[in-house]
Length: 414
Image: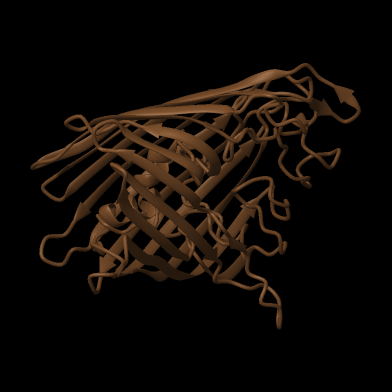
């Protein structure tokens, strides 16, 4: 795979029913440039019910910002629209490369306002040699939990969040309903050579702040009861690493494990200053493919690492870290002759409660679970049609809600 969109997009290409084998390759003196990208858009219809209708960004099930029971949108899916420029060269016995990308959204929410969000997810340089590995400096996909999202079938579709995140660059896929978001992080990382399928990556990455979910009508006091921080990791970065073994053949597959650790300084709740702490998480996963069938299983645990995005609601109002658990299973089958990939997946993300209190996310157990059924059909080498149905159930203490999303659209790789 020569396309240098990103590790995420490359893996999506490999997993898709139809994969582009290269971007637009341009020789330029000592360099070879690769211009590639992704364009996708989906019509989505999301129906919400339960106790959380009107919650502003706090929950995935039933959280509809328009206070409507059904909402239609035209939006990008889990993958953003991408335009990526990469370059590579061999100089002084080193393989040197770079990648820069821009990621515009496809949706707008107000007449006359072209305000869909745009991100810049990648800007990094690499250098190394196949004999000893490579070093990456800059911003790219995080290390911990990266394989969880790269093997998620909704990477080519929508998953959850279509009603919640209208106007953003992406939806959520299975983020928060089976795994933690790896996110796009400033980092300094070392990747080993590939030793007959075995490899590892270790690095330091930008530490995150501890954050709380938004205010919600689900909470009597108008806000969730989670501690927040302004100090990120203080004087320390986050530490991340992963190890994997991949094999090919009629029974091909991959197994992996990764971990994350970072200090959390400056924790506060209201006017109370709380003790510093640490957030940790680990995961393990496997995917196998044989005779058109694919099976993926993933499991993760964390302490203080939060849910959905890293360090979100990881600490309660007293500053005590909360235990989290994420897992999903996924089965796919590619129809012979036509290439259509059919898939079903189920997963759950749980944040444990730390004791009795008013109905707030910092004290009550919080869980999201989602089932997704999808069909991904290649109509050309680069273009796939996508149809998905996803149902999310959210529980916070005694409250619950659900959202059901139907999405139809297309995704193009070049």
